[in-house]
Length: 209
Image (tube, helix red, strand yellow):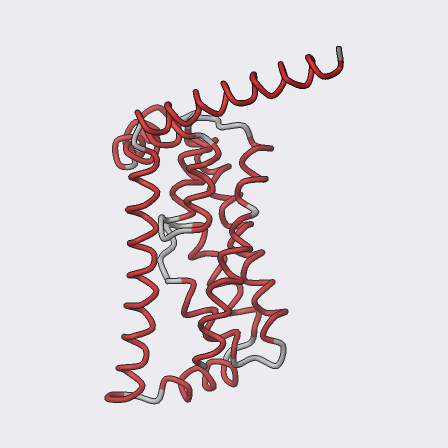
């Protein structure tokens, strides 16, 4: 009896996995994930190449980072990063990670940066949630980020995961979550992968600077 129950549960699980797999194929999730991952890899290589080129030909990037550490308090840098991560991700996080590498406590500063990014996403979520109440603004923003909203509706938490890990603007994905009232608890869980992205990037950038 127990064996039959186990077999039935396994069959149900396999059927669900098959359905999910078919759905993601039909909605082109896998091709989107592959394309975004490739773009992310290219973005990292491009960023590192540009920094090394600037360092070699034009300026002492290490000296510039040292100057930032010396002339600006961590509070100013963290506040600037929080603002950037709340409003469309205006400044690439990699620059701030490079700055953290020059601090007295690189991994502590990295954790704070990741937390600022996570909080920025939460603020963007609630901005989207509040903008939902203003029809004219809601319609304007929905038109601007229609593709992100469409992907979020198709793939749910997996799209939040992509926004947290890959070079999609995390703040825009978070804003879209607020606009369509995506479940907040699920958003918080998927957005935690933002920390994973920062660790991965730090393992690369800390070696350079």
